[in-house]
Each structure stands twice: as structure tokens, then as C-alpha cells.
Image (cartoon, rainbow over all chains, first blue to last red; front, side, top):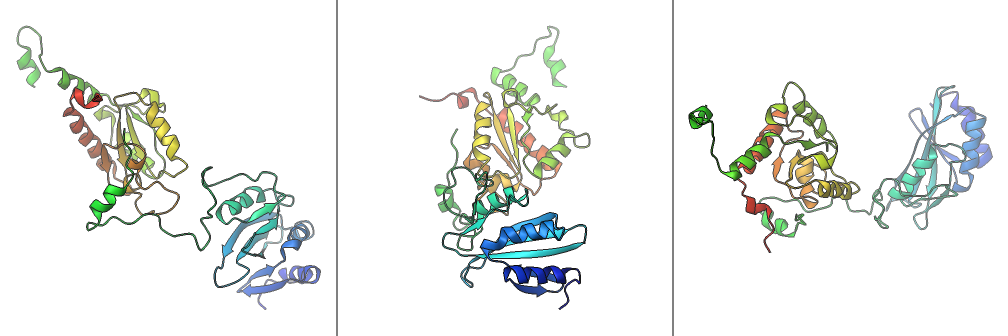
Length: 173
Length: 163
């Protein structure tokens, strides 16, 4: 157990209250929290243990190896104590939803809009669920999922130059 | 140069109207500020004092499309920006030209993905493509001079729509 000594009581408290499991890597701690408990866990960490800053809020897609498919990641830092902790929320692929963290941290507003665009994870109770990064007429596909195709158009080499040239949509006047 | 010889005693120069119009168009061409990404820095460097583009008539860059006649698309054009680009191009008065500066504007360079327009010639018709990532200021100036040579060979009927 080579986590920071200041983190140990905090992780202990989280485990008792929310029945979490942890994963450690070098000196980092990842705490797995259920989606229903995440807002109370964030509030507890912010109020009692001085984690003022939500440094990062992203998600990862582990399709098709793992199920539940998405892990929503909250990286919290405490400037007063100089520690960071990571909370991971496993979310299922069918109808993915998490309760919104905008009540706890204001910066989660845009982070959750970005998650909704890029992954399709819908924040419940979000005050402003508009599209953030993608164009308005984008549709329903979510680019950062693992089943979204990686490239976009066929590469134009010399052997297929004319074929692709005829098919490419050039702009007229 | 040749002008004094042609002037003679009367002080009159004769030329063709097309040559005169094309000469005047190339000598005072004002580009529109359309620097989107890293190529914009090289465009600024080309406009600054070391590689001066004012020598070629581009005394200043106009931010308004109504007052410019050249659009240098410098940088990546994303799908969200493409309608904006087209609208600004439509607002420029004729005659207008487009230089696609850099790899990302010509063919999207290294980015083959969902969010960038694959070459700005899907959105606006381009006259000169300048390659490079980013192109050096000298390369951009070479592109501008190539455009001037293209303009000097233009005829009036090119710009009139044939019914």
C-alpha cells in the first residue's frame, strides 16, 4: 500500500460510507463509486476533506472487453492538503446516465455537456443540456466511443487519384 | 524602364484594357483576415516587417469581407466553421480569389477525421494551393506571386456567366 498517508483516512471513510472498491497504481488511488452515490461522495469530499478543485471529468470506453462499458472519471485535487484522488463511476452502455455534479462543482457544467456529446452519457438534472462541441445538426453518433469509425475518407494515392477525385464534393462558384 | 520610352514627347501610354485592369487588381490586393490555426502565425510573419507582403500590394488585412478581395484560408476548417466560411466568402464582392494556405486547408494534412472538412475546396473554390505545415513566409509569398501571374492572364469573359 504505497498511497499517500494523507489519503488513507479519506479512502477509509469513503469505503465505509459508500461501499466502494479501490484500485491503486503507484501512489494514485482510484475509487469505484456507484452512480447513485456519486453526488454525496463528491459533496463529502468537497466539504469535509477540502477537495476544492475538480481537475478533470472525462470518461473511458472499455467496449467490448468490459461491461459496464463506460467509466466516468472525476479527478479531484485538494490544494490545501496537496493530494489528488480519482473517483470512477461504472456506467452501463444501454441508456447511460449519471446524476449531475453541477450542484457540487460549477465546472462540471461544461464537462458534462462534453460527455453528452462525445459519449452519449446523459447527466440527469443538468441545467443546460445543449450541444457543446459538435455542430448543431450532428445527429446521434458519439465520436469518442470505441465503435465510432476512426478515419473519415479514403486516402488518395496515385493509383486511385482519379477515382477519388471524381467522387469528391468540390465546391462550385 | 520601358515606360519613358513609350511615353515619347506626348506623355501617353497605350495598353490593352484587360492588361490595365489585371495590373491594377494585382497591385493592390487586400486579403481578408482568415487565420484559423497555426498557419495564421506564418501569415502574420509574412505580413510583418521581415518578409514584407506590403511590397506586393497587401498593405493591410481587412477584417471585413466587404472590403477585401482575397481570402487566405490559413488553417484547419472544422465542420462547425464551414458554413461560416462559406457565408463570409459569399459576402466578398467580385472579383475575389482564394488562396488555400497550408496542408490542412488544402487536404486536411494529417487529420483524417470526423470533425474537419477534408480540404477547403469542398466549401469554396480555390485558386492557389500553398503546401507546407506551416508554409514558410517565403512559400506564402510565392503562392501570392503565383496568384498574381494567374490574374495577369485572366480575360474579362472568364468572370461573365455564359447563358
